[in-house]
Amino acid sequence: MCGIVGYIGPKDAYPILIKGLQRLEYRGYDSAGVALLADGSLNVYKKKGKVSDLEGEAAGKDVTGHLGIGHTRWATHGPPSDKNSHPHISNNGEIALIHNGIIENYSALKEALKDRGFVFHSDTDTEVLVNLIQDVKDQENTNLEDAVRIALNQVIGAYAICVFEVDNPSVIVTAKMGSPLVIGVGEGEYFVASDATPFLEYTKDAVYLEDGEMATINLNSGLSLRTIVDNKTIDPYIQQLQLDLASIEKGGYEHFMLKEIYEQPKAIYDTFRGRLLPDQHMIKMGGLFEYKDRFLNANRIIIVGCGTSWHAGLVGEYLFEDLARIPVEVEYASEFRYRNPVITDKDVVIAISQSGETADTLAAIKLAKQQGAMIFGICNVVGSSIARETHAGAYTHAGPEIGVASTKAFTAQVTVLALLSIEIAKMKGTLTESRYQQLLEELHGIPNKIEYMLQSDSKVKAISEKYKDAQNCLYLGRGFNFPVALEGALKLKEISYIHAEGYPAAEMKHGPIALIDENMPVFVIAPKNGQYDKIVSNIQEVKARNGKIIAIVSEGDKEIAEMADFTLEIPDSSEAFSPLLTTIPLQLLSYHIAVMRGCNVDQPRNLAKSVTVE
Ligand code: AGP
Image (tube, rainbow, N blue to C red):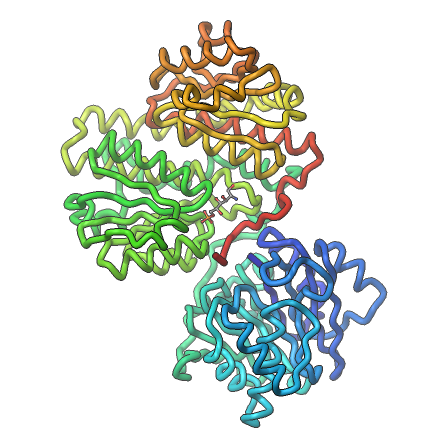
C-alpha cells in the first residue's frame, strides 16, 4: 500500500531515494516525502501528490546527506495531505520514521502519549509510533534499536518501518510485521525498501526480513538481525536476486501496462518453461509432485484470491472440474477469512497472488493452514510473504508487473492453473493419454497465438475510439470465458473509470437486459468452442434492444460478424485455453480507452499495486 526506501553509505542519499520512490510509486502515490541527515542537520521534505511534486518541493533546498529515508503513500489513516505525508518526526526532532502498514491500536497509544505531554501534527498512526519510540528511549534511557524493539512490542498491526536518529548518523533501524521489506547489502552501503527495485543497479545481494524480525544497519559494525518479541539474534541469509534492471524499466513503451500486455507471450513461455515438456509427454512441477497425494485425495480445492487473481481462480475452477473432476470453490479472500469457513485436512487451498503480499489472501491462507488444509501458492514475487506461508507452490515467471492493472500476471496464473489441472487429471486418470498430449502441445503453442493477436492492436485501438466516452459497459461470457468477462470489466473500470460489469451471458435476461439501449456497449466473448449457439442467442437478445455489440470471435467467424457492430478475432483453441486468448483484446481495449481519456494508466486514482492492508 505504501513504498518505503532507505539508504546509508558513501553516496548522496537523495537521488537514490527519489529514483527508488519512483520505482515504488506503483505501491501508492497519494503523497511522498524524504528525510535526510547531513552533518547533524535533519532536513525533511514532504508533499501531497506524486514523487515529481516532492522533487519540486525540494528543488533548490539542502538535499545533501549520506543517510536518508523516503516514502510514497497510499492513504489509510488520514487523507492525503502534506501533514499526513511521511516521514514523521518525533516531538524532540531527533527521530525520523517511515512506515508501510496499519497500527490498529494507535488511538490508545496516542492518548497515553498525549497524557505524557506529546503533541501531534497529523492524523496518522505512524506519527504515534515515532513518538512512542522517543518515549521509550527517554523512559528506558536506551539506544535507538532497543527503543524500537520495545515500542514495537506495544504495537498491534502491520508494519515495515525505517528509523534513524539525528545523533547517530551511522545507523538505520528497520523492522517487519505483515508488510514487505528487503535489505540490499552493498559494498559499504545498505539499502532498505518495500521491494528490490530501488537498489537493483547497486547490488543483487538481498536479505528478506521475516515477520517479527528487525535489523540494525550500522556502517561501522554491519548488519545485525534479531527477533522483535524476544530479542534473539538471527544470522542474516543473503540471497542473490535474479531480477535485472531492464525488467523494471518501460523499455520504450509509453506505459508499463502496454509493455506488460506485450510481454505476455514471454511471460507465459517463461512460466511453463522447464515444466511443460510435450516432447517428453510430461509436465514437471516440483511443488505438485511433493504434495500430489494431498491433491489426489482432496475432497475439494478452495481457491482464494482478490481482484484479477480471483478471476484467474475462477478459470481454475472450470479447469480443475472439467479436466480433473475435483470439486472447486473460489473464494474472495476477504470474505473467506471472516465467514468462519469449514476447513479440513482433506482440503487443498490454492492461494493466487501476483504480489504475494495481499493482506486478505495472506490472512485467508493462515486461517486455512491452522485448520489443517494444504496450502499451494501461485505467486509472481519470489520470497513474498504469501509464497513463504505456503506448504508448496509454483511461481509464475511473468517478471515484475509494475502497472497497477494486472495483465501478464493473469495469463501466467491461468497458465499455472492449466498445468496443474492437466497433470492432476492425468494422475487421476480422468484424461486419456492422447487428450493429455494434445493439451500439452496446444498449451505450448499459446505464446505464438498471442504474439499473432498482438498484431491486431491497431484494430483494437480504432474500436476503442468509438467507445471511449461510454458511461457504462457490459461484458458477457459463458463457461471458461465468464471469468474473462469479469476480468475485462475490471480492467476497464480500474484504469478508465468507466463503470463496467461482467456477467454470465445467460444471466443478462435476469435483470441487466433492462440496461440495454443504444448507449450501452456490450462486449461479448464468443469463441466457437464454448456454448457458441447459446451466446449467439444472447447477442441477438442484445441487438433486439439496440445494444452495441463488440464481439471477441474465433478467426473467420461470419455468423456473429453479421450481427455485431465490431468483431475482434482470436485464433482457434480449446475452450479450456481460450481465456488466455480472449483476455488479450479486452486488455488492449481498456488500455487504449484509458489513454484516450487521459487517465493515468499505470497509476490509476485511488488504487495501489499491492493491497497490504485490509
Ligand atoms: C488487478 O488489475 C488489480 N490491480 C487488483 O484487483 C489485483 O489483482 C488484486 O489487488 C490482487 O493483487 P495480488 O494478485 O497481488 O494479490
